[in-house]
Amino acid sequence: MSEMAEPAEAEEITAAQLEERHIQRRAELQLGPARVGSGISSKEPVEMTTINSVCPSCGQRDALEVPAMFRNLGDRRFPCTACKAASEAKEAELRAEEEARLNRERRERRGAEILGVLRSIGVNAWDHRDATLEAFDAREAGPGVMQAAREFLDEVRSAGEYEQVRGLYLFGGTGAGKSHLAVAIARALLLDPDVPSGEVVYDHALRLIGQIQRTYGSDERAEEVLQRRIDARLWILDDLGTEAPSADVVRRLTEIFTERAMRPTIVTSNLSPDQLETRNPEFFRVVSRLGPRYFRTVRVHGSDRRFAAA
Ligand SMILES: [Zn+2]
Image (cartoon, rainbow, N blue to C red):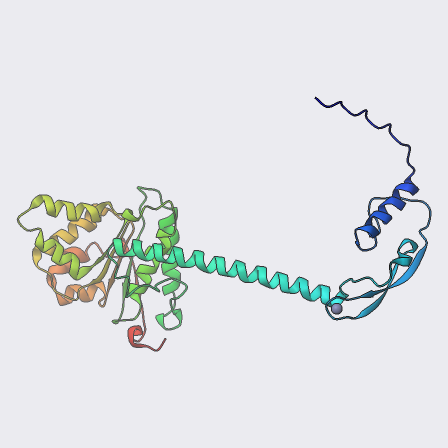
């Protein structure tokens, strides 16, 4: 056990002594002159002198006004104003670059995640890897297309589980960007962490028709295929009407539309609802569920984007 040292008796010290020690200490540590308002107060005016400062970067000599305490320290090496500003700017630039790199990585990771989810809901991720609302070229599409897409998305986002949302029926020529828009809406919805990916179902119409046809003979499997569409928070039926489906397929499609009872749905087609029916009278059952009461019909103009130069 060592003996405890007696605490040193407290020394009386004046503000002037304190200031002097402070300046001395800074000089010993080769710090620059104390800034005005360093916390040490003195009513005595401090005697000042001029010393030379040499910038360690560019060698520029500056005359510095410093307290007389620094008189004998000779040339000091402080960065000149320009070099100091330049090194601060360089640091800020490096920080900004690093931040941009992290953001880019985060975006890429999120993008890869979303692509995985899009694939899992049936979207061809190669065709639609860049399908975002921001990337949609609205100039050709015609007035109101983008607005309709955004309004639909907003309504879906704010709608409660059992609230009705009028669907979006997008029609126009092949490659005008209808699928792009539909996938972009799904993607935007999937970015919302509150929406489980299983609640968005994307179907290319031909594939769904094939899927329905393969369930013939098994009511259970047919039920499963239909129920998944009926329960989806958002259902996308892409490219309806390229093929005239059988009466039975139309009946099942109609069942999905009817059972969904205006849960959010997007249909895309080369044809307007009227044209669908003209092309194939069997469609009348579905078309009765595609009218203005259930769907907002928006024409998407444009040349074939798939072959346009990027
Ligand atoms: Zn300099």
